[in-house]
Image 1 (cartoon, rainbow, N blue to C red):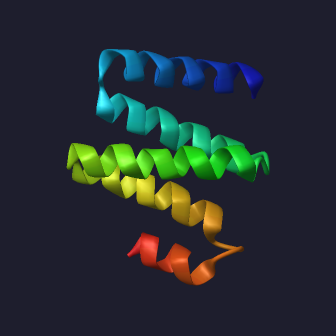
Image 2: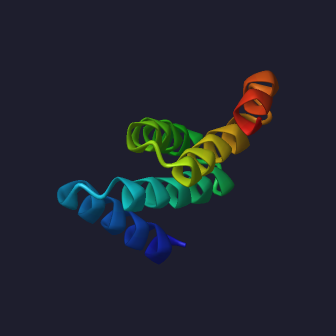
Length: 88
């Protein structure tokens, strides 16, 4: 799992430096989900929140849906109402 996280962290870093918002959103999505599965919500939630900011700025509907899903997935137990709204 650590190699996968390192790979996606590198991808996010590269996407930031290249200004590639779609690649950054995808990388943050994967990082958020992976960290969430490992129960590292203190890392996962900020990654998902950043993915939403990046996706909204990009205007790309696919990136937006991925970002909303990631945050909704992470909040499904702690904030179910908010999670449902993000899934909508």
